[in-house]
Image (tube, rainbow, N blue to C red; front, side, top):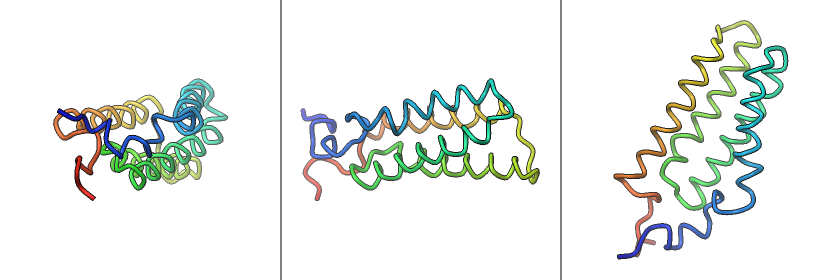
Amino acid sequence: MADCSTTTGNRNDLTAKKAASLLWYIPAAVVLLGSFWARGRPWLWIPAFLVMGGGCLANAKGCERLHCYFTGPLYILAALYVALSTLGLVRLNPGLFLLIVFGASCVAVCLEMPFGRYRRKEGSG
């Protein structure tokens, strides 16, 4: 039985390439750093979430990775929320915010268990 990770979707999956460090691992570390540095938080979180969101959107388009359809918009909205909080338009509770963002990310990744890693199944065009 062929696994979706061995189909054509995987070769375009950015998570399987060196780009993953630049698109997700380093930005995630930057988000973690921002959780300890309140004054620098907007300067760290906004670009980090934009990079992660852009990477996910590119991955959703390129290989149709299922969780990227959710996490791409989620991270872009997270960056927008941080920007709005910086302008004083919304209130930001950093701990709760990160819990929601990364909790939703985990739920999106878990959706791949019952539905498969890629939206496009083997043999589809």
